[in-house]
Length: 425
Image (cartoon, rainbow, N blue to C red; front, side):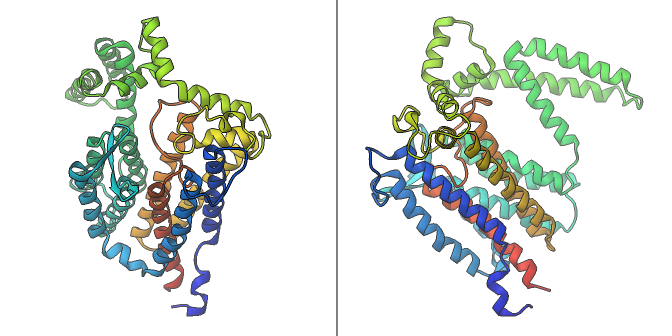
């Protein structure tokens, strides 16, 4: 053990400083997006920015608690934390509060708590614990199925609460499993499934099945190492099943607003009148967001000077569309700075993860980086119109105590695990 006097300096301060910059800059943009009137009372706790300031102060206490707990606690009790997270998700079906069509919150007094924001951390701990207990790569089918189940249970519970955005984030664990020995065939299967799904919705399952069949036959003919004839037949049958299954899921399972968003993204609607109505109802947020970002130019309009932000043209701007405030008031320079800070944070976590002595810490570190990457990529892509509208917050930026605390716990557990690597020789 190193001397106790150096204990407080063993934390990775680069990670902590980037975190502080993101939280601080995020709060300034929440002020811009939610203030009312010409002057701003920064201590007005009735406004979202005032409430977020309380959340930030409580976050400091939360960080102190996380770093004060012995690092081994998180590994030893990871299964307990995971089970508690599952129970909190299941409890929503009985005690949950419905907000915007999703039953994802507990109402406690005058505030709400979203357990799905903490379930990602719990799942990361459970995945890290399971893989580290194997003491080897996850190459056997049994181990792969078990770890998939660990990830799928909370994802399914969140999906049943009509929170598709948070469900998609669980796909980030693929990167973690790939790092720990998952065969690249799963990557090929996943990408193929996405392509088949898009083609099936765009051109129909029959045409998609024909295209897939031609591709599979061509690949079989051109392959130097000929597989047995049964293999391409099975692959073709799976492709057909996916093509028709996706179409059925789209038409019979998805909610109308979910179908409309996908329809707009893939340009599936042919009726001009209905298309115009869908654009007014669904793309209003996106159009206003794009206008706000483009109006910022290179340097931005300045803090509290964004006309579209102060005019409240962009709905939900202090939550899911917070990046549009960055674009308008801080311009290309400010937006680039935010992107750089997020990239630096994720790269720093990945770098530290590779330095870990224990597999548990490494797997958990990769989980942290992957979850943040999915949130970052989807939120900014949504705000800029690159992907369909999905309700998912930008880490450390979007308004909300659950999101801020969930990501803080996720990140600082890894900071603690990394410090333990330094303290134990």
